[in-house]
Length: 295
Image (cartoon, rainbow, N blue to C red; front, side, top):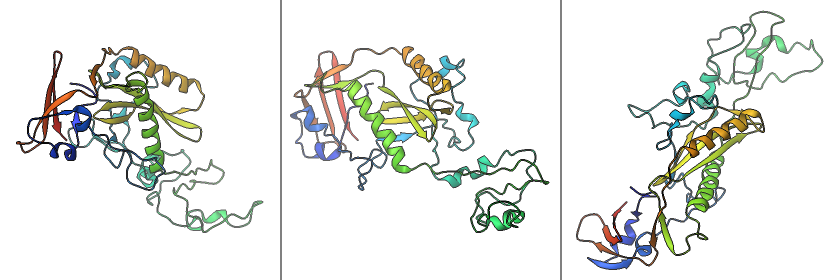
């Protein structure tokens, strides 16, 4: 198994005659991806070329059990597994998906509320004692706090907060920028100007999703598409935990064995056969038999 897998677009294969020799570059035509801020849908996520998964597929995190920055996805209730597959899940982007999770715990002095988070009641109804002009500011009673966190009794520590959605463009930016770095590292046109490059172990990368001073690390694995999974606990930018999270990923990379890649000349001639229902192409390169199946 080689990474990225030898996949081809249907339009390239269907235009070829039965058992015709063609250059491999004519079959493996690339998809063009637009900038994350471009208004088109030609992005990694929309094209299905990058996606979130709950846990790494090829990276063995069992060696990281002594690293306190290693995340345990099974503890994160906002990202449950789907069915029996522990890898399949979604990372919610909309803030409303997190209201219930943030309201699971509260200060001891906060009264229980029957109102669901995000109920959109006005502050005047949620906190009726806050607007009697008894302090130095007159606060707006028509705003809509997301959490109903009124104290049980006077002079207890108050609680409030704001949940923020993860911007879809920000996720595409994170995915694209990491994939660009991986492409430069593993498939550099400077290192391999005349060859296509394939690895027996998936190319990997590490990306940081930051919001203000907070961040977390994602592992990236290029297995046909680029899979991203949360791998670290959250940390403050520039903190010791930030450094520890990166050191943890360094340890993960050092535990991998990466063999020399298979190099296929771009002008390598390959057979294709259109008599079957799906396009198939094949060829012999040294002691490697190469088969391409239409994706």
